[in-house]
Image 1 (spheres, rainbow, N blue to C red):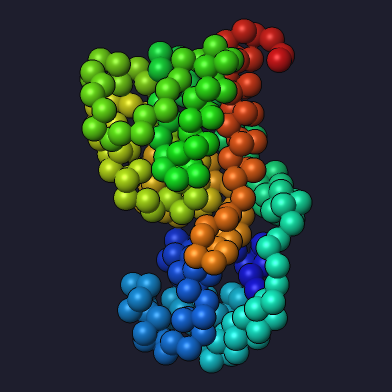
Image 2 (cartoon, rainbow, N blue to C red):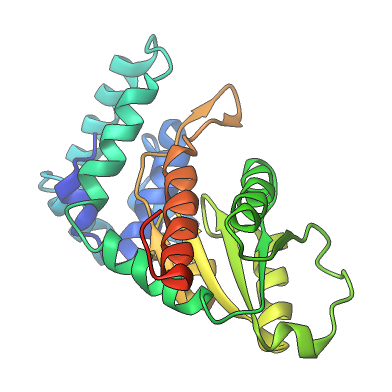
Length: 245
């Protein structure tokens, strides 16, 4: 439905429109243009520009394309994980992923503490990330409670790594705000650079994979997150040791 080239061409408003449509395809396929504009808080002009970027002359043609896509995927099974991994590497390794990994390592290296935050599957990976970083000599903890008491002096020399697929989780945005207020630098690892969490972070590392929902559950692959966490941890270790892992 959406090609890599089309997704890469979206601006911030078009990205939010894309995210809404992919999460509400059946609903969007039958909406009027003004209804979609109200639901996504964008103008009808933005929607028409979005349609043209996706190879459609207007909104009516885009809805036909969307309905055909829904018909073709009704009986589709869950994607093979190999597809998700190849999608990640196609979209990111051709860009500035290595540069962002090095930037993240530069931010983390001088820190006394690394704090991981996230909820749901992102919380599970945050806990894994804290253990992995600590195993390579960077003291790290997973903080689940946004009101967990941490002295300001500790946070002033800390880095927070925030994990979120959508970048819009209220729990995580609240947690980031509190940690930044007390002096912690924030690195966001999320699926898109156009999100609330991304706008709050000192550095955002997007991984761009298609979000998947199966029977109401978000099953978007987390493989890119594991790759990024392990690669960044190893890069920090190399910088501290001055040698290859």
